[in-house]
Image 1 (cartoon, one colour):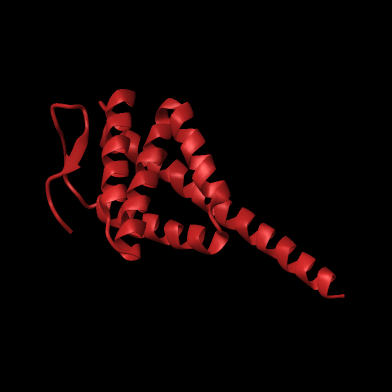
Image 2 (cartoon, helix red, strand yellow):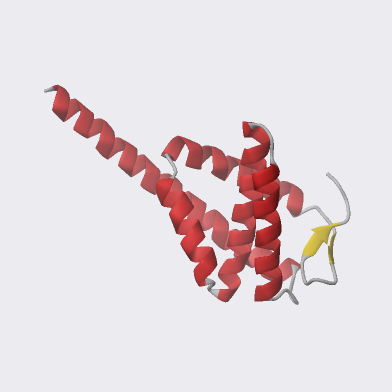
Length: 138
């Protein structure tokens, strides 16, 4: 009987994770559209350079809250990479999402949504290296 109970929990967790993953993919599609509208002259190489920058910031982040914020930035860039159907972007996106427990994935989704509310209000400027940076703080 207890084995059956555990199986049910596993199945429920799997279904919840699928729902959260669906919401996450929808959010990344919205980010892709926002990226195209906001950065019409962005390039794949510039977006990959931005991904490198965000991974560096993630590796340097201290504390779980800051790490989650930086991880959200990584996923925002991955959403932008969808414009170019980047294999690197999709691989990282899928690898992280599949390996992540659904509670953490749900927290990350919330952090991405919160950060995108801020990003949509920001003014952006292209730097000489092809990356974009915001010129104002929220």
